[in-house]
Amino acid sequence: MQPQGQAQPQPQPQPQPQSQVQACTTPTDPAGFPAWLENFKKDAVARGIGTQGMAALEGVVYDPKVIGLDRAQRKTFSQTFEEFSGRMVNAYRIKRGKQVIKKYQAVFDKAEAEYGVQAPIIASLWALETDFGANVGKFESIRSLATLSFDCRRGDKFRPELIAALTIVDKGDVPLHEMRGAWAGEIGQVQFMPTSYLKHAVDFDGDGHKDLVKSQADVIGSVAKFLSGRWQRGAGWNPGEPNFDALKAWNGSELYRKTVALLAAKIAE
Image (cartoon, rainbow, N blue to C red; front, side):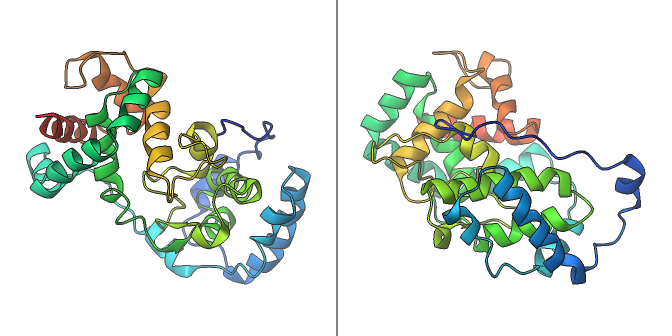
């Protein structure tokens, strides 16, 4: 899952010809990665990445495990709603969601007042993404994004994400050693992609940084801001209610949205 205090809009890389995308049936030869990285560094400097951000690229090497995971992807939501929600909506997440709302009630209240998004929905997404920060992933984000940017399959998708990740480091919002997450470059307790991080992350605790790795307040405020564009204040989120469709901004899968809504309803009880 892009800046309050954002970087200036950057020109987007030109898309690969369709024939090239179709021809990308095997990973790009990793022997070419060092030369590609040197060229990318020049582009990053041209796009305004400063010394701190550029330092994050030093020593970065190709990660074959990331490419293996990317190539092995299958359709994510192939289960029935009963199967998927039965696994994802569990007693631990319901109980923990209630506890988190109680612990950070003032922050949730501030988020709802500012963005209109109710606490149970924020808690539900937080639970489903990382179990409230317990499972954020261990992949080095810059390495993963550089590897995916180099590969022919989805390089055009991931090069802007790599620039965004370097921007986050350059701004000092997240130190390089904390830039770890899932294999595809998602960052923090609610798994924002770097471009989404720059667009939607907010400094909700007022410490001068938008930190979705360590700051629970920033997490709560940022989820609320992410959803706020289409969210109807005070309206319901269950299927058939106005805010069920608003959840498409987070994930387009109806199965996932129904699961988010169910967990939120259980947390709200």
